[in-house]
Length: 381
Image (tube, rainbow, N blue to C red; front, side, top):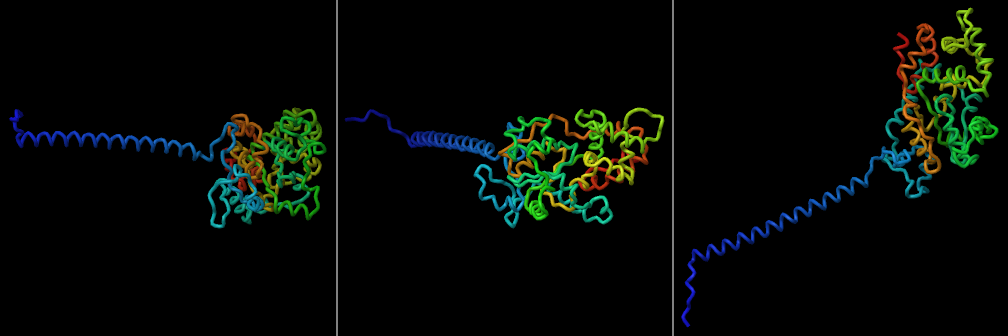
């Protein structure tokens, strides 16, 4: 049979082949592009997962607590680390010897105390004997091996509530009547002074120890307001016994008939011979004596020093370092209540002589330097 199809030229055949190859290349390019999009999509999903997994350790949860446990330098905690439930194991940067590193700010506070304690020029302002007066200030929680040194006018009532719950006297902070918190016959908080010398030393060496500080002058203002201005009815001796004693000795204008003024209070505290009056006032002076006199920070090696100004961060940190954050929470802190108020300080010291303010600073200089508070030059110069 005769072939009716025209012959295919070499040029036409080459064109067909080129067209087929072009189509084939485009097909492969589309496949390659689709594969690239798939890889990018999977990478985005993986990145999102990683972001959600590694949360910021300094962020707060809905309960305003840290997401992770932080370092525990206490030897007792290190020995017990293997006994932590998996979800409560502390995390953090490991040191060469296997210990966990504390966040830098808390280490710096302890190092500052050590440096000031070694300063011979400040010895009289930074050192004190671990006397019964000091041991009376330290409350004990044997169940969780905690010692808390009381520094009045620095939010100590809330910390006492935390320890009362831990000691089992009440099931929760909300259940503690306000009149029981400071009643040491009912609140279930033993003082360190109640133990034998051997038991005291054992606890000082092995327990988690902490206390809280705030700007020394702002603390004095708080003490004055609480005890002499807004004096509660169940503490009448501040107005009726202590205030008249201060006025008789330190008021310059004898014709002045008003009640005790902040100037009288400052003059009393700055007097180098204040101790004879302190003896008459007894333990009531705990609200305005120095942190050194209360807690002996150069003689007792504390685990953590909290600051009132950063209590929102320090309270959760202390609970975690003590290993009790899963048992109790620090009460809610009202916004702004812990912020240093320079305007208030200036207002209270307005009209007080520079001589009296300098004498006051001379007494509290150890507190300023031990805990890193700035010298109040705006009052002194």
